[in-house]
Image 1 (cartoon, rainbow over the protein chains, first blue to last red):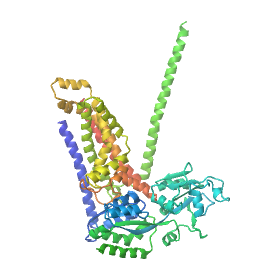
Image 2 (image 1 turned 90 degrees about the horizontal axis):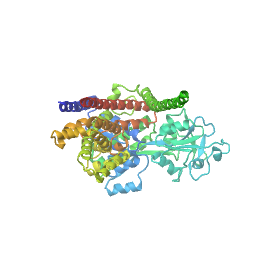
Image 3 (image 1 turned 120 degrees about the vertical axis):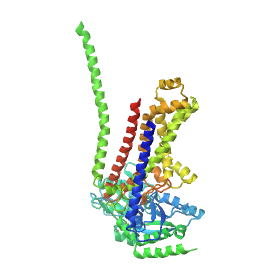
Image 4 (image 1 turned 45 degrees about the vertical axis):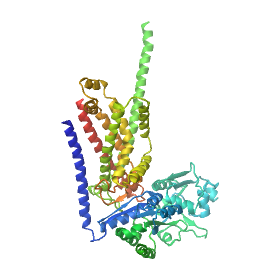
Length: 325
Length: 292
């Protein structure tokens, strides 16, 4: 008797879940077929890679799936490195990246007979920020940036950078070593030398933690993607970067898009598996869709679009890759 | 004479009562600390998330706009994953515990295995993720699918279930076993009819603690390929899937403030599911406790 009850309970539980799931899939099918536009493509599209690029891809797949309800795109966010690991084994159709593929990753791909090609889909400007409460710094030269962030420099106080600035300790806030943002800053500013560490340095994988830390401390400085600055303009001040030409440039949509904000504006990529382009019509269709809509999607989630011609050029390129034998 | 003797005793009694009062206050304060932080957490999450929580939120797929984003894919994914995990981990875990407690010879080797199972419970979850990737995703070539996630999570919580079930089996009074043997029951009959029902409440407690851990895990599932954005529900063991913690984690990392509220709403849903799981377990447990 007891055992029957137990079994009944279990069966009921499973049934409830089954019904829930069934309702859900039916609902979504109904909801989306009405908005579908009689598309012919179908099938899965697997995407992985950078969590920085993820919001753009989410915006794109969301819209694409609405228009093509027979396709089932999935976007993972295992990071640029994790994405390349899967892509070089041919496990995904696209992998997002906030940096270029490394030679050793390329080598693995070639070994496995996988051809990966980069598509630039947006730009991001790594923004160096201080708190709104900071009233002495406006611009920094690359030299000063190095002095502030490098382990090897002696400077620990603002007055060490510029004698007119206060005699206060510099508090550094930086993304963690696993992030593509750190990689890029490390490469172009620090030139692969170690970052200052210790009690005055805070590392965090969560950019919102950095935002909060810098906003509340007039002697703090840090860097992260432009979107995090754009959302917190009332609390943070972006610094102009003087790359040696004596003309400091602040990050804005225009200076990032035109490349004037250099060297800290960086391209965001998605790498496409050329084999998928050739054999899976839905992947080719989605990539085409991506290049037509990436600019809009990028703006929507706080990144900067590329100039229109750049997308068109790449569209031609994709067609060539797809038709190559 | 009498008065002289009474005094030190009085003082001793007073001191003991005083010590008791101090300890009581101390223990109460310790309890209070936990409760205060729990209340703060609940207040913050409810305060931030309740505005975004709606039927639409529960039944919507991820979206690039905070107002349209929903937890449906994660909710269904998490529940399906938990069913798989519970089915596998409980079966294997309870069987292991019964073998180790009832059948295995009491020697150094058994003791060694026991100690190691306890150690396994402390291994960081990411290690199980890597294990799952190597074995389930590649070696058994399941791929980045629901079943691989379920097997990985089952492995992750197996040690907790084994240890809890062992404790439960051990705490069944020996008199019950002996009475059963005395009536001529075989070992298996004793286990099935006496020990399992008596140990069930303890096993369920362990299971629910383990499942509560599993439902909140993110890292191992990202490694074995749970998606972050997905627009279809899993319809078989070999479907692509996502789970609630991955979606919540993704939302909390966004620059726009509204996403924090979307994440908070997700946490509320996760907590409700957790409470429901607990309620089911407590319900079953109470039924069986009455029997004894």
